[in-house]
Image 1 (tube, rainbow, N blue to C red):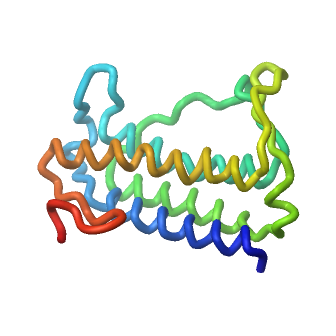
Image 2 (image 1 turned 90 degrees about the horizontal axis):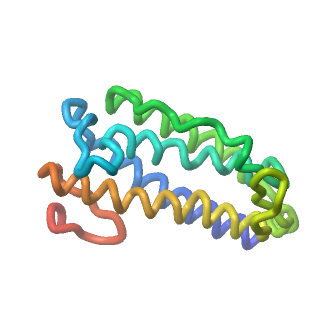
Length: 164
């Protein structure tokens, strides 16, 4: 295996496992809760978080993506079981696509809007940015949602106030 692939797989597996532990704590009766009118509901945020790994298909299987072709936002899943099943589906599919050589990981990937290039970067950078860092960002939001609902936050990068 290549150095890029080894590191990326370790990062991906860690972030996926940590995120799944957090998603497993979601109570069905709280999925419609939202902290503010402009914020996503708890179920909407969780559904979005589950869909983020789908970017892996686009980044690792294509050389570009045009935002003009982006599908509409997904409807929020209605139960924790549905959320976990969706997360398992997207993360497993993306992990299976990660069997690339280092040479494949450094191929440039482009983001476009209406045919105009917004930027390009190596696939490995795009994957970290649009999949891993995006997961971390929304998982941070989710941890605040949990805290605001008195749901214990599991350890992420170390102990939390709820679980030492």
